[in-house]
Length: 326
Image (cartoon, rainbow, N blue to C red; front, side, top):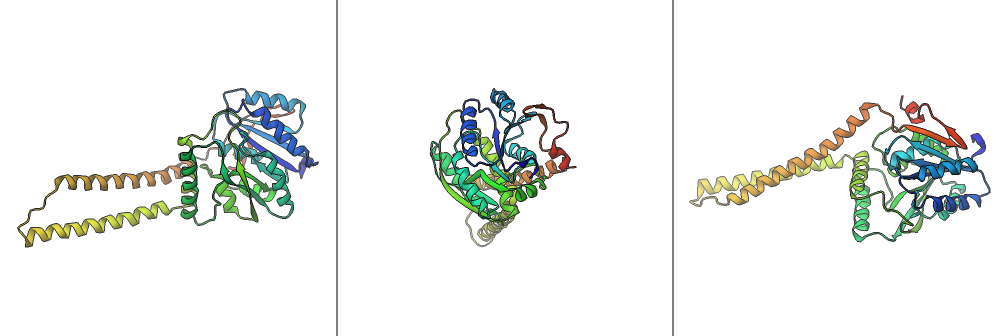
């Protein structure tokens, strides 16, 4: 590999000042035990605290540290993509900066990679420090996604994984804007293996995935890999139409063959509101797909790099991903 880099560790960060020093220390310690050359690619996703400055300082005296400083917050999945675009290693490792995923597991991933697996991903068997609601919604999302798509996306897995250089190169060929990286890794295939672990609670700071961002990520995952919600609209529409037709036949029967008067204006209004609500929901689902088509047609780069620090500051004239999308 160029520059003799064996491992590239991608660490996306957004306002992780409270934990970034410990993250650097633990990852540095783990990678040092490999005895092979590596690089630590910290991707600053528009942080407003001092975490980027702290990593910039590290890059001046630690040649393994590199900082990709994005011009604004583009999102976690895009930050991972930027790290992959700039990575040089034969193996690329993705790990969040909050230390919920133990860096020590990287050594097991490397061990499996050397056995011939091109993708080694971490599967959570326990999630510490998270609310019951967060655990339930996460579990439900992964299972809905699994049954909604035609590809096998492992359940209870995040972006913490090791991918081979050939996998990374294939992912760089996928320019879609609303990215769901763990789904894309499953889509490209190759030999994959899971390693089970218990996820720790955050060492410090606050989660960067509140409910709003979790919903956005869920929609990106489902709409990127499945059109079954559109088919569901057709099935439910046919079912409701059949029910409405049967009810109409019942009303006509009462009017023509009996003296009974059809009652229940309140129930009719309720049924009308239900049908209208269903139509609006289906329009919303359709709008999600149309909006993503619109995003793809704009042709904008996935991200913009403000600065790239590698021992000394180097201003990147044009982000690599922009070149890939031309």
